Length: 178
Image 1: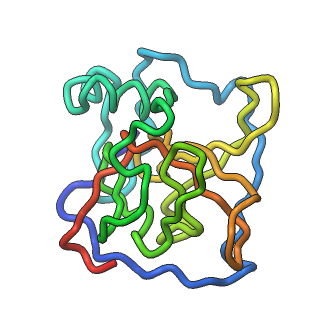
Image 2: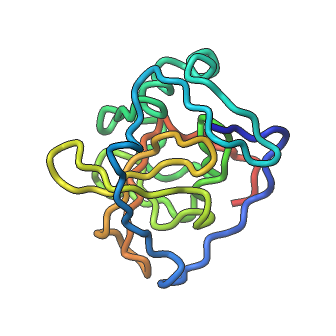
């Protein structure tokens, strides 16, 4: 996986655009499945560095590692960002990528932080998840591959999306313009 070197750039505010705001559903082949503890050294992008799973373990807290690298889930209603009210930019806890702004957060009653839109379409990736015996759409950070949560099509607003994200996978940057 790759992590950026240097400071992340300033956020681009979300634009309610029905066509651009929709997520894609892509199948994940069995060859693409991740194995816990395996070293993932993908091609690096300019301005990034390769990070092994051992390095991730040393950089992240045990809870962050479990959620971001092992596709864990926060207990419902216990996350730091479950309820809206804090202002700023939500970044990936693994790499600092800009993910969501507080203006798009809403209380879905699901027990996890929920957002109606992402900061930029290219900052998150979606893949089909059949881990619970049913089809869901998993959300991962495009930069580091960290598991963020899932997106559902039952949200409010023009996109109709509910980005249901683990608090552990987020860091709030209150100083960044939202």
